Length: 303
Image 1: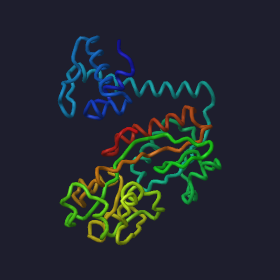
Image 2 (image 1 turned 90 degrees about the horizontal axis):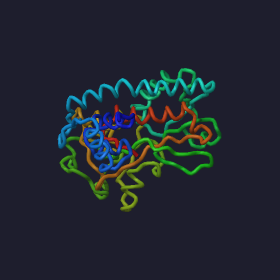
Image 3 (image 1 turned 90 degrees about the vertical axis):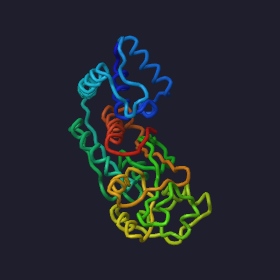
Image 4 (image 1 turned 180 degrees about the vertical axis):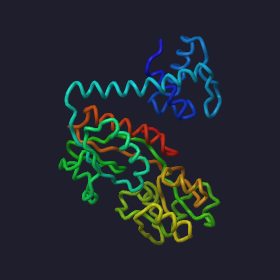
């Protein structure tokens, strides 16, 4: 009557706050998710949540199943890891690099959890491959690369982790701050602050400015997100960053965030060597990365 998929669905519904977003997280259509929940309620003979509430309000029966899910699912994951170890000596390494400057916000909690789950796996984020991490992955110097710019390479697969919106940050007193979104032409007279990477790796260029044949008046680079935010807040330029990277500064009313046109969305991937896919510890890292990103980041969606 009650299956693990039901427990996962209820947790997704609680964490997402709506049927639409929960369906995305468990990779179902909204109709299929609604049918699954209705079927479960009919089997149990009790409603599990109150429709048309946001965030979703659970009944006592729903709350009881949520409590069960919180107990059972971690134990199930732990059992899977233990059985994988019993099946063979799980030894390995996870050396990774990051092409995303703002990814440490969710990657470090992911790595911490993974180390707790797989203490026998050597985890390292080595320096020295930042110039061409995907090529280092192809040479087996790395095992995984976090990137938003997949490049076709033999023996490498790109596993989508989540989608995010690229937003423009402007000073509170900026003339554009009163707008809900900006068009490419709005940046003609602006100084655009970017990370020191090639323009073809930045969505603000590839998906927004270049298709409109627009260039900003000036381009300035900064190494760190906090430096970029200081420059933006002081009116010395604007910048385009993932919505999760801006969330803290928007909450503090430090800057204003604007959509790029109708919304520019991008996908973050884990580039993984094919020979490592299917190993229990790599599968667990990818699953942990997805789960952690939705827990600690604002505004991300399932890929």
